[in-house]
Amino acid sequence: MISIPVEYVEYLYILSVACFALSLKWMSEVRTSRFGNLAAVVGMLVAVGATLAAYQIQRIDLVALGVLVGAVIGTPIGLKVPMTAVPQRTAMSHAFGSLAVALVGVAEYYNHVPSIDIFTMAVLGGEMVLGFLTFTGSCIAFSKLQGLIPGKPYIYRGRNLVSIAILGSAIALAVYLAIDPSQQMALLVMIPLALLFGFNLIMGIGGADMPTAIAILNSFAGMSAAALGFILNNQVLIVAGALDGSSGFILAVIMSQAMNRSFTNILFGSVGKAVEGQQSAQAGRVIQQYTVEDVATVLDGARFVIIVPGYGMGVAQAQFVVKELADLLQTAGADVKFAIHPVAGRMPGHMNVLLAEANVPYDQLWEMEKINPLFPQADVAIVVGANDVTNPAARNRTSSPLYGMPILDVDKAKTIVFIKRSTRPGFAGVDNDLFYLPNTMMVFGDAKQVLTDLVAQVKKHIG
Image (cartoon, rainbow, N blue to C red; front, side, top):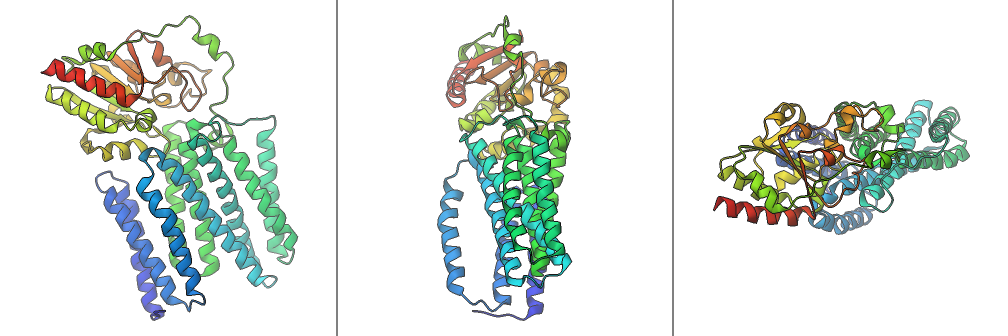
């Protein structure tokens, strides 16, 4: 095994940290996101390589086996997982990363018990609680996103009190261990309590809040890694974990502000639960269904078109056809823009990634604050599977769980074309009032097929 002087390792750690910082900087912009991803990969390779070179590895065969197993599992995931499943993959990354941190914490405890000072044990207890609750929480988030369990929140009487009691008990045991590390039974009780809290917390969060929940879990995972860095006296782990935790927290704050919601409401508000009287509210309302031929006629002569992508576009892998439609409309003289809501899809930036994959120009992607004033000028707004983020009930129905959440002002466009499989509610479980507006043209079907047919009809009109 190659060994290098300690001072060189420190220099490599500084290089690694610089790569991580640049990665966050570059990934905050769509134009430079590819460089950000590359910088993160380089930073991690340097950090791992420097760490292996800094210590006398006792079982290099186990390290090689771990790398091999990770490569065998990770390579197909990286190559085969579609963009629509990236949120699930992200959730599982949080799960395995936080589990690894928590298990290393357990190993450190048993390696040094009972001669552990109060500070070290307090940090160990905190990182284990964070790590284990993030593991189960991320597994539940994955299950909801993958459709293995219902996306709506699981609610029972006194759930929030139960969650607080579980977390409080886990923290109390961590404090007890810090005072007396020899009480190993306390650890064996603390771990299941932390696992149970993560399960109970995310089970009570509805699908509409899952992007923010993923950001919060990302923050937890980073904080637990940073805490472990203090225990292992590893500077690069401290900095990387701090960057991960702070960026996840900042992202969660930005998203909660975009939804006009507090962390408390997101974690304990149970948005997405059944709304009493919702079915009766739908009674008597009429949906106007149209064909792609009708939509092509409306688009003929339209000078300003806004396309609103949503998760339905991603599920149908329709982003490439959306790009083709946008190009056709521009050829015909229309100004085409894409309206991006901060929480559209299943994770932060989901729509940006999908549209970038289809090579949609960056200057056509408009954030909510900039695009909303332009909707009244739009001749046509085409909604492709974006449900909750376009629901006018968030503005005018106080009984709606979405009330107060900033939305894309699609209803203010002259004509609205809504492409959707059915009238089923979105991930929040709330009926969309946009369906019933007199200027809304509902076109039912698979988004990719509908858009493919629409492209063919638009070509006829242009030709």
